[in-house]
Length: 150
Image (tube, rainbow, N blue to C red):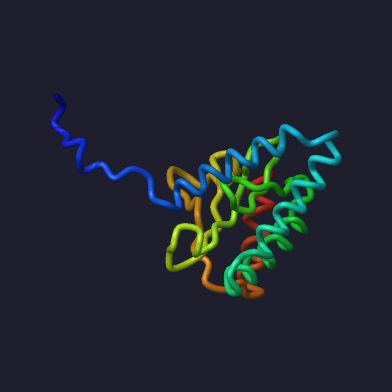
């Protein structure tokens, strides 16, 4: 027997299980969709619907983040990723918005995947806490997203 006590493992949280179920549902839905244009349009509508379901403060931030990202990088395709609004390039997630309510955290985050071209030396941020989306924050998001897809 290994040195770990398996009786202390509590498994995934309810939020983590819900995210995995969301992801499975998203993949099934994407597989059933029609042509490429239909898939993209429906995926974008799914993102807007998910944003509309969010609590007020998260929804307001997600709406602004969505607008900034889609304006800054038209090459990014909105789609859901584990139940979160995400933006993909060539089918691969580049960035995503995680509401504070998603995993019951104290702030929302804007995260970037390893596909994002944000490299800066040997260490750089890959996620940013969001408590409010001001014009300054919008400008920074726009700059980051443009750099991410450059």
